[in-house]
Image (cartoon, rainbow, N blue to C red; front, side):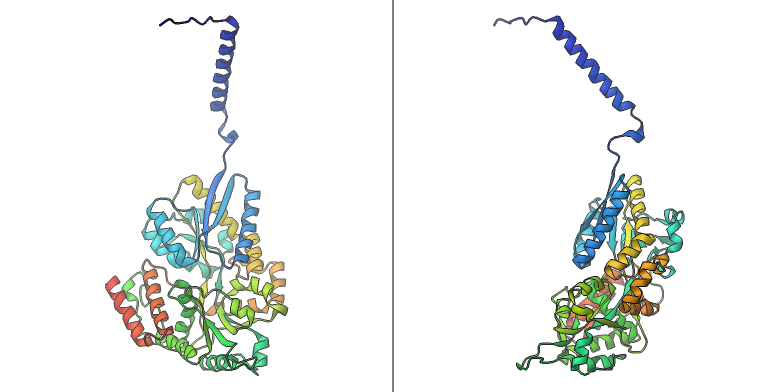
Length: 441
């Protein structure tokens, strides 16, 4: 085989030499750029959330976009990952797989479980050095703390009341709002009507959530507390302190809901869809137990503002569930954790809390926001919000300990069984207690 010798030309060697020198200069120049002058120094932060209904997610996205515009070095991606019961498997899988989000929007009761999984970073020091700490509603710190450390910050707060349609009350001849359980039952009966005379009921008194998920439990808990019951006794860190079997408040609250169903006064939600308000908006149901988070889209969808709110009727004492979600910071990298806390500070700010409250009906977690002129004007226009603010003093929080999800699950199973008529309150609570005893003891 003959090899052909390719001649070399001086100009070709010169060109190659020039290209080599330019390449070296480019590489050297890139290495020599100061740290602050790197072309890509954006920190990307992921937020998992289950904000509902969709109009509230639109409000959140606008506020996230505003943050991203004013913080070019931090870009937050807000991802809707389903309702709380749908989120839990994803959260636990992400933690076990060492691929958690940077921020999680979730109810505070999950805090103990995530701490025990070593998934969160404590934020005591960062919060202590932040001016927004002094602006947080002091009543909300209980939901932020576990074992002496702070693990989350409040996104907003709320509680549970009963929305009603005044026009339907008037048509049924109801002049006074129910203040007791028995009055609630009687009013619900009067509101259950055949309005068009075709022989079938087309308007029911009250909408109740069906399902054993956390939302149903959250809506039901005010009745348990109002009936004189307690979810835990003694040290909440001792999961065995949970007592359902002989809980008179739980028994009475389950019986009340069952009586409402037996009376024929109830429209049940689809399974685990108790947050939907289509029947209330359509006038097919006159009352629904929910919170201020529904206010924004009820304003849009109900003509002439034909809705109002009254407090949870009393069994033995006034009570409501203190709700709202917190922001949890997961263990990632120091840079991402710092960026995530910057976003958390923004969420706690007077600006965010005011806009979020105005857009969704949630109650602000920031005390300055509650005195903001825009919010004070909003309260004058929205007496429904005043009801939630006034009954907040009777609010009770769900306990934070690692076993709360098991407790909630078993309360939910008892609630669903009673609502479907499969067992009595006593039977359902006894079975739930037996399951909890096996788990905890």
